[in-house]
Image (cartoon, rainbow, N blue to C red; front, side, top):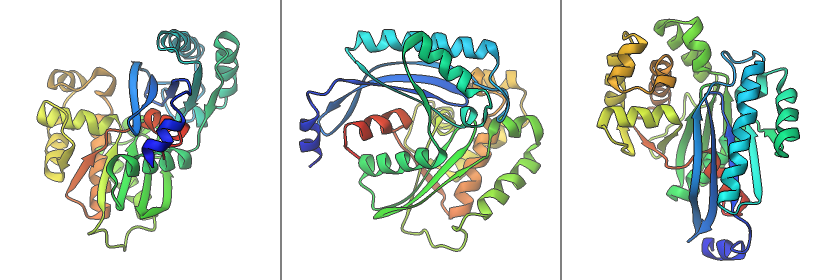
Length: 295
């Protein structure tokens, strides 16, 4: 069936998908290939749209973001893509002057940057996880710099949650102990506390988990244990940013990575799992799969 869907869209243009996240700007060109999507090329910039969630986007960051969209146009032309989908997430959702950024980009490039909700993020992640893994029962999560999306899938998508847990805010306003309490309190409000997830698989996505996998294994591995993540957290939590960079943490994540690891550990405790699988998908791939009617 997937092959049939793919064949129906073979004559459709390649699609360029742009993700303006709270901690990065990324764009990829996708084509439909053998029942899935294949990336033909992409660009990525470690970039924080706002210093904290809920603040306005500065004039300089509006300029940098608008310039990035000119690079997107060049990428799309290089790969014969006439269709461009551009979305923004939590930092943009909470910025009062997002419309100004959107208008600047539209005027300069003709690309219409749209905000997607946390529910849409979580739903896309769960649907693409199902497509990629063929699992029947799983809990999926994605940790961004501005929010955490969680979904429960049991043969069909059961529920989704978008939590306003921001590593950008945690690092500026909390120590490790107080951050742990904030995260736990938000998770405890979800209707997941008393459920038995013994037959569910925990699937994680996002840059924090990918960086953790590399730092633990010095290569990306798709399975991490609670003890491995806790060991990395303990190794990094008391280090300075310079020491974390020397350890191998990307500079853009040197301040926030321990808080991201703390979120992962709290989620694993919450659903009673001692291992998490790293998905190969991302928001851009999920949007491409949706565009080609494959999820």
